[in-house]
Length: 516
Image (tube, one colour):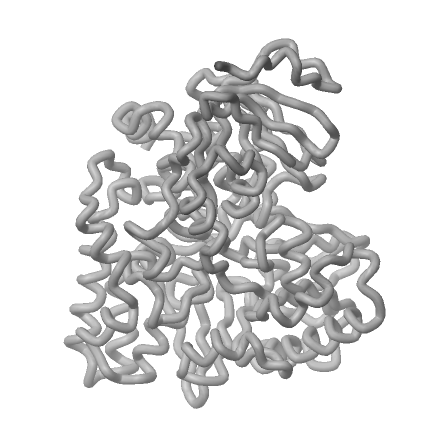
């Protein structure tokens, strides 16, 4: 028996139902909306924040200061490359001004007693690593070849439909540590090969080597930033949705996913009391929030418990500073500051009161230009456990009090100390400084536990044990950072995977390849 939808009173009358509703406007949600709108669907995107983009968006301060909250660089965005091909289909690639990183050293990695510049391209990477570790030359060559074989087996990464599930299951169940054992035992080389793990937030002993290979391969393809940062991509996607007849509504937090008596999705309800109807709902919200928005009885108890019990990924602390010092030397590279070669310890250290022994630092103003009053902006990111801020978890942003502000200031100073070690021009020259803790992630993107990448992408929660885009509620689909893989490229692929279940894989990939 169908629920009588007439009894669901909407404060804002809807002239006719939508074909699909997207919960959240991160890159995956925006991508799904463009795909479906391009294929003739009437699409509505609902975003709880006042600005679209999720981790793509920027926050702004007086004087022309704009800070990226999650986007810093991206790979594979050229024509003919994986993300470039998807952006061509979406119709936004030509709207973005690409800012290239240095192909001879886009990631500047600092370790105790050693500095390594990671170049793009497997040939350059292999040669640079072999120069640094000549006794490991044979293992390095085999490692680079193995990565390329691994990524070739992932269909959506290569814009194919057919998927060798045994390949994906195999390489998503082997850890990076196990994989590296076959090529080298050199502790410093192993650390450098694993040093980009903050891009997906998993310690090497639990990182699926398939995830590591996909992320490494993406950034091996000539990394870029965008003029205007990730916000430029979000705004281009939002404009594209509207051009295709779709709608985007901000300041609408979905509180309930409506399901009829036959366990078929039929719409959503927002915190304003509005109700919007559609036979398809795609959620790019955190999966735990998605489950909590559903009537409890529509999911099997075991499935519900399993999903709610899944481990969340790492949470982060971010420091945003401005300075009148010239930081233009950092235009074409990012910096990784490691205080140890033991990367496993860094993930344990997120509990440490003195702050973690790792910092990622980027200087977007060196690429995009300084503020109106001549200031540069630098951003530092590190790990921080949710447990360190959990006591304020029930508070609102404006009511956490002096104790929290003191905690935040101390944590920020500890992170700033890591930043100064790789950007010494900042020492004594910081004009303004703001700090974001895991509570900030939770507040602005509704990420459970302040997790930067959603569900922890460990071997225990990936591959056959990972989340699937299709749910047990007919018409309800998942996409986003917790499904498949994180990052801009990862969530874009996640959205295409989700939409292939709605439109048909062969059809959709055919359309993408026609634009490549």
